[in-house]
Length: 225
Image (cartoon, rainbow, N blue to C red; front, top):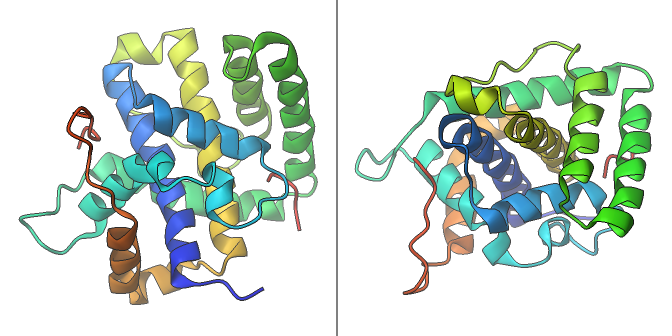
């Protein structure tokens, strides 16, 4: 299949969306609900019709990530609102995903735990805290021991809250899933450096202005091929 710049932009946006939410939760204890649901739902999508289908098939579901990518990657000082923590999370997720690929059997173990979470969804509900705890366990048991270990900075009270900590780990797992997708559609770190303007144009094309009653803005397949 031939993938486009838009496919790569959507996948990269998924990485930035997960990273933004990790930052949000660690610093404020809250994040955008639509983005949160879309990121976690991506962990359960096995055979998407296209790249956007991984995030529910709706551009509105990735607007948190669109705004974050534009803020982080723009060279226009008037537009750019870079956050070094989010940049760190994105780069760490990219390196971590590559190292997981090289660790024999890790993705299969993650998939098994996600399958358990999928079964829990039918019993407890799609985003029940038990489901999130299982996704967090998939990360802590299989990913957190692989370098680079992602050190999340934020408010002590939020980081020590078990429910928020589980959400953060689940979102880090979703971030890794987005990196897997990004590589599947042809994304590379060198390509990101050389084609930054193309990514920005594709992200700008995906941007949707907030509705009049929507005042929210960002605070700034684990089946191995």
